[in-house]
Length: 252
Image (cartoon, rainbow, N blue to C red):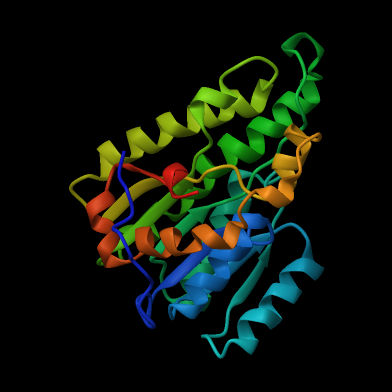
């Protein structure tokens, strides 16, 4: 486990000249990360499944005076390897390269016993939370390897919480994603590509509300409170956390 250096804040242009793909850009942490990366000078590629929400975020980034973002509508639930290859080709053609990926997309179907999980829902959750991140990363890895300093950031969930009863396919996918990040780090350790994970505390998100519907989520911190940590992992300072999980649970 790694921790964010005390008092660390993103430099005004700490990600200037970098192109960063935000997967799940309209979700809680994804949206916050996109705005924070844009403020730090990055050109962000916004990937999500809802075009109106992507367009709204695009306008917000433009209003910041940040580099013009790009929108890439894609539903991870039904995306094929060919779709990810097309994504890689488009980024290479339109952006000229890629310097980072933030895997912030998530699909959670609610808490229920394994015996009651519908096969279709099991497959859907694994597709969005595990297969999608693998296939997307695999397709984009050649582009990342061309960057002198690239980063892949996975968003984790608390293993002590989601590997227990009723977390179903989501808990399985998050456990497997942790293994994916570890293997990918081992395979890229001597390259220009850095792999790290981010473990935030419970946040004020739709996923949290689904899992804890009796909880007042207003008591939880906003995802924006942790966007600086994403910028940290994507920038040069984040090299200190290479192969590590940046644990933010003690910050709130």
